[in-house]
Length: 114
Image 1 (spheres, rainbow, N blue to C red):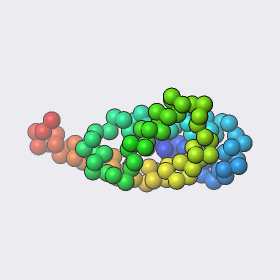
Image 2: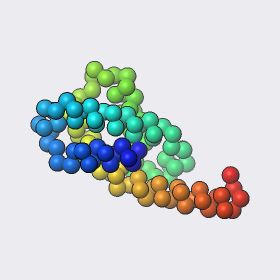
Image 3: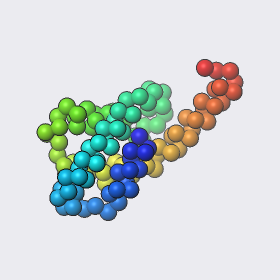
């Protein structure tokens, strides 16, 4: 999730809506990365999702499903809106989530947990 979010962020740091709508490649990049993010979100454990509610896990998965199954109904302006408003949150929040989960997994292994 983090890698895909960072790639969107790096590729489109200052892209205006007009530029985004005029460039099919930018839309393709965003759609592909949102699908990766959504698929990865579907593999996050319920416990992690519950502990980190700042990420809208359900909407993240829902976007992936919408892109995959309703491709011809995708609104490029809504995708751009998610690039601008949702991707920065992921880029900020995910490193701390990943770090905390890794620490907890290591502590569990060290204490003999599974």
